[in-house]
Image 1: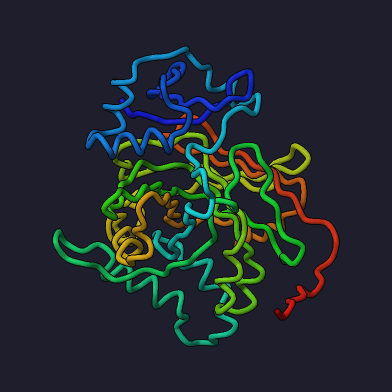
Image 2: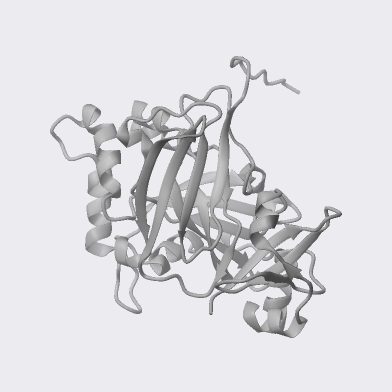
Length: 332
């Protein structure tokens, strides 16, 4: 039975850590008021999250579906200082993921092989090394810190200078850096790695700009190994009507890189092994509504679900009002 960790507000607004299995109600994990504290205690004791949950005992039952409907389910983990929650990811990691990107940039490349397709082929040829070897490094991007993350039901907001607010349904890994700099993977969650695909399409070198947007994390932290094959669905509803409904695949059977290879090429940098930091790492997707001609607009509702996750990730799209004005920098 897979263990799931959630953060749920009680009737008074206090945060509770909740553990759940494959079905039925969850239960409060007594003695903990954040998943971060639970993870820190697990590392300190040299145990596992499942052992710590067992050690804590079973608190009150929690109806997860009701809590989600009432807006009481938060991100599955947060850092008390958002600046110490690093948000990054890798692209062109899934079979088929190069198609949409390749189409975006073929106009600039003409008949030449695009950088996107070259990067994708590198992953196919060297992204799954044998044990003890290091594979080819993937495309990598930075999204921000914990202040850019939102939870289930919260709006994903496009800044005033954005050209697009597009969904990216994918899985993400959550990590805690231990006292000696060791990265510990806490588990996996559903995510929407929200990006600006119109900016990216304008010039490949604007990819970094296109990623500096919010992102959302799904309700559950799935503890343990990720299944090799994950099937999910990405939908967009507008005024209650479906305008996009496509499947997406994840898991290593559908990827050109192993998760271990993606993790190595992130955590090989010393600055990403700072004790006490949290990391969320987005693993990429091959399903985007923008490649099917969908133009999102404020009020659209992104819906992402996938097994083995029990609860969906739903976020409305919002846009910042007003117009862009120059940022004035003062000289001291």
